[in-house]
Length: 319
Image (cartoon, rainbow, N blue to C red; front, side):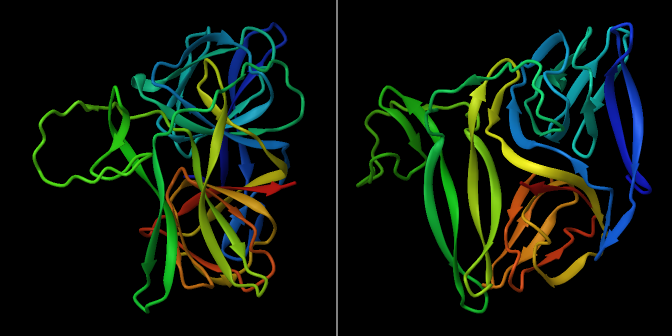
């Protein structure tokens, strides 16, 4: 996949107002360290969306020129001509049909999907988003203190999900929710709890690479909350960009200490990314995940391939 360049599938409006698919290939034109990269292309914002399995939108033009990058699940796009295409993680879909009959879009097989949206300019033809009210919590955030095999302590932010619901609210499994519930024995006289369906997400988790004043790199787990809703699902706010480019890393990647070349978001579309930091911590970004890299001045970090797989990513350069 993506051996000589990046395959981009495009919906475009013809002079007669009908929408058609066209295909383009963006060649890899540069080598930077172990990476092969395309040219950098202008972009204005990056955001993320979660769409429910019920998503099924009739023919409509795109609200703006942008890329849609499915990071989990699958999206089907159909035209009035009868042609349909399915987009999965690693596929690149570019929307240019901002007028005319547009296209139809739906969640494949009735399953939710996630996507990243890269806006290519500042022109918004139609904004279908609606501001969301603050959602009910899906779990309890807590701090997990751990240590490496060398005895170096570190922490991770984690969430204990709510598993039960009922008249009294939501409850985790055998641990606290907004108040702590400590059972004094195993006797349950009456259980009023009900199992909850898997809740809709409240945001997109990401990794934030940073560095101390001494140039020692470290990371934090963070969440970018959903701020908007509508027929297409829930959407985060926007990260301002200058440009973006596609990058491919080899299956035997073992890129020793290096700082981030610039402040950037890295969207891991396929392959995965293992990272080691100056404070001794380690973590992995799985396919569909992303990180914000801001460790630009110190020793940096080490990046490695996951399970011997090539990595296909987008480097989105922050404004």
